[in-house]
Amino acid sequence: DIQMTQSPASLSASVGDRVTITCQASQAISNYLNWYQQKPGKAPELLIYDASNLKTGVPSRFSGSGSGTDFTFTITSVQPEDVATYYCQQYNTLPFTFGPGAKVTIK
Amino acid sequence: QVQLVESGGGVVQPGTSLRLSCAASGFTFSSYGMHWVRQAPGKGLEWVAVISYDGRNKYTAQSVKGRFTISRDNSKNTLYLQMNSLRAEDTAVYYCAKDYISTYSYFDYWGQGTLVTVSS
Image (cartoon, rainbow over all chains, first blue to last red; front, side, top):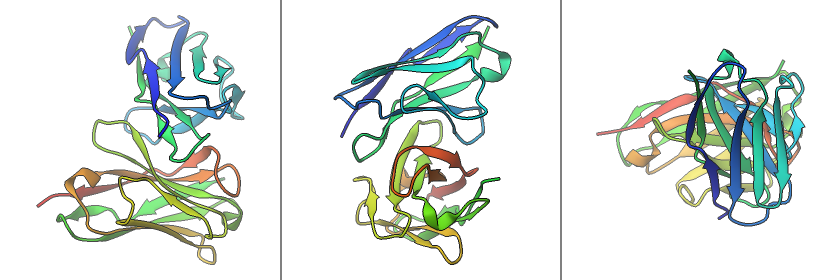
């Protein structure tokens, strides 16, 4: 199975800060990497697919990049409503696997 | 708009069975792959199973292989997860999720989840 790691596991940022989360795959997955946001007590929601494509309706302050084994998720100006856990997920190979998540809080 | 509504969760004893359902609306159900993803209390997301648009191709995670079966009824716009020989470690919120394409890619819509608790 492809193992996904994320860093950091948690972070606290001030409103307006730039937030960056990294995701690494244990083997190359091309760009078959997605990012999901899960707000407390809610179901996950897709934000970014295929490493860098923003789902329609998702604010442009969210972005993603990377290919192969190393990926980055960025919130350019974090807002209070961005408090959530963010998961990366690969679909290059079954079984699909998620990273352990990165929890974002506001100072 | 796309809606996915899970049902069938509850409290069951170890070794028993449960069937989850996911009622879909707002899209052509028979054209898309569908998934089950679970989340144990306070833990991360774990993919469980996928089924292709026509039900002919199915894959399940090793952790549930031989115990869980994914299926679908396109005439009823409903996805199912038959869970047998349940264990304490199967305790989780179970989400159904729609795939972007007919087989598998990314999960573009999710249901609200249904809680399964396996406890004696």
